[in-house]
Length: 186
Image 1 (cartoon, helix red, strand yellow):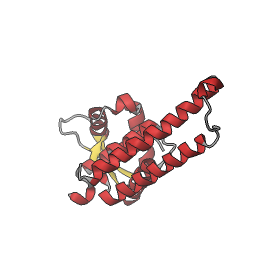
Image 2 (cartoon, rainbow, N blue to C red; image 1 turned 120 degrees about the horizontal axis):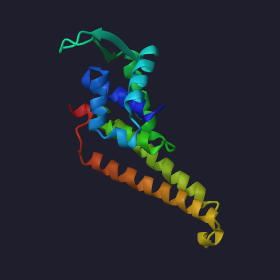
Image 3 (cartoon, one colour; image 1 turned 90 degrees about the vertical axis):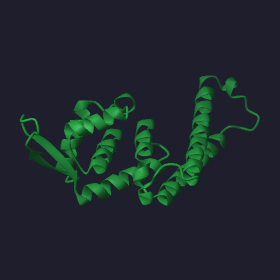
Image 4 (tube, one colour; image 1 turned 120 degrees about the vertical axis):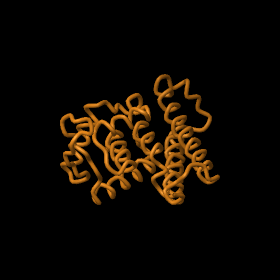
């Protein structure tokens, strides 16, 4: 699963129907070209690939400006199910790359609030478990600086697990306070 694929599905889900240029404009407006490598080639490749997988249906539509026809895409039932599955996996994943996590968080409002909270809760607990797992290999009272570069790696993993758990809990708190209009609020 790629961040670009998730973002493309999310853009089409939000629009209902869209041609490649509209999807690209949406992703550009979200800044995805900076944090998700959502370049034009990867966007059009994702559209064609997902159409070939039956996630999207493509149809040529005459251009409003009288130019060549544009291919318009809309989600199939299989595509809607796959979009939600990808979104859920990316939110709960502990090993998700930051671009994939960012894509999922940017689309989180396509889920019902309770489901988003459940997935984020799973993620926070998994981050805590990861932190505990790494910490279990460090003897009590150890100065990681004395381990040299390996100590720096261990410190990085401990910090990453802790900061990701804290950030996830902060997002959970914002959602619990009713921030953001979720799918079941519409």
